[in-house]
Picture 1: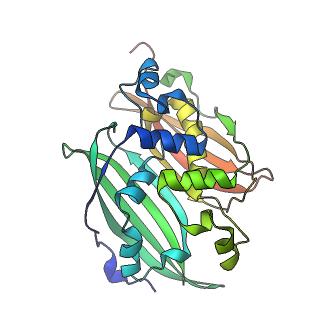
Picture 2: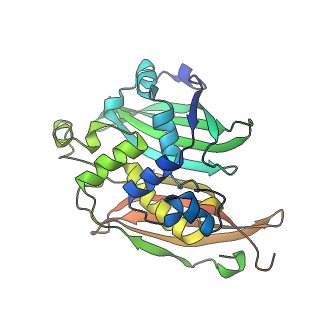
Amino acid sequence: MFDKSKIGHSFPPFIIEVERGKIRELAIAIGDDNPIYQSRAAAQEAGYDDVPLFPTAATMFGFWGNTNLGGELLGLGLNVMRILHGEEEYEYLALIQPGDVLTGVTTIADGKTRQGSGGSMDIVTMETRYTNQRGEPVLNAREVVIVRE
Amino acid sequence: MYYEDVQVGDAVPKLTKGGVTHQQLVRYAGASGDFNPLHTNPKFGELIGVGGIIAHGMLIMGFVGQMLSDYVGPTALKKFGVRFKGMTHLDDVITCTGTITEKYEQDGQGYIAGKVQAADQDGDVKVAGTFVAALPHRGA
């Protein structure tokens, strides 16, 4: 059962550098062969200063920036092996480019326990706010996870 | 693309992907950093009763992201969110579609908003969501 006193709890900040190679790797995995994700030269040819962020690139910031998230969720009593993804939302606040160094802070924004036919489940909303090396807010990520008990 | 070029009710050009493969999921796990064995190890999927490997929901959101990137360009996006509504299995062929629902101006900047979804070969919806993009004015 989700402990409601954890609403508002923030995990320690994590740092992730935006890398051209990782954007390229993500685009290739998704099967997007748009050259703007492949190299700086191709991106510049298309009118960008550098390789742009793929729309879902922030998922890499979360997983690779904070490899300890599973342990942190376990610490809140959430079994990450029984986790399902409910929702994901990004708010793009400012341009993010390769070489930027982002700081992410993840907060438990909401949580509740629901009784269903197959037992109870916890529904937890996490928000991660990213700022860049100049302290400017650049991206917010909101994620809802469902953990079956 | 310009603000003036888009009308409410317009379709976002649809994107049909090749069938999801096991290799793609391994590749996506490495790229994204999501190593939940549900997405790469068939035995794990059987163990927890979902009948084998299930694709990362975020891969399917990525397909929708590719459609939006092709449509408005990645740096035009201001908001993009989805709900995960169904599990995607190996060999599923996903088609992404979208419709413009709104256009408006705020502080001289033009915005378009739309709804998007991804569904498999049987029409089963995997993800559904919305986006907002900022578009320049023609001649500005």
